[in-house]
Image 1 (cartoon, rainbow, N blue to C red):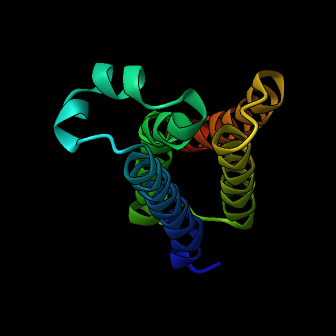
Image 2: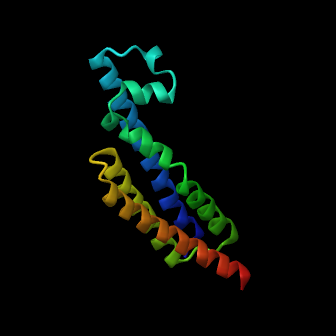
Length: 141
């Protein structure tokens, strides 16, 4: 398998992050214009939380989450690519991670149902830990 195959899910995560970023700004700007909230009133995250309804801020919370475990995913994909360790299992598992992160983001940005979001987060995390475990075992042996 071509090592570059791991770069497609890598880019998929980047596209997801871009989409959530756009949704966040569209919702916030739309709300601020309709509610006539002056931008200077939301100059800190605390002020944003106090002045903008929680559901408008769901994408902002998701965006922060996209800079937690996905950072390890990016590093792992680059490691696999650089070491020539990419195989079909890694690529499929990477897409599983991305798929569950897409679903997680969709839930967090809309209904924000906590248990659904948690389950999707855990499934994505298990895929990532599986990938990491395989990489570590391959490096050791």
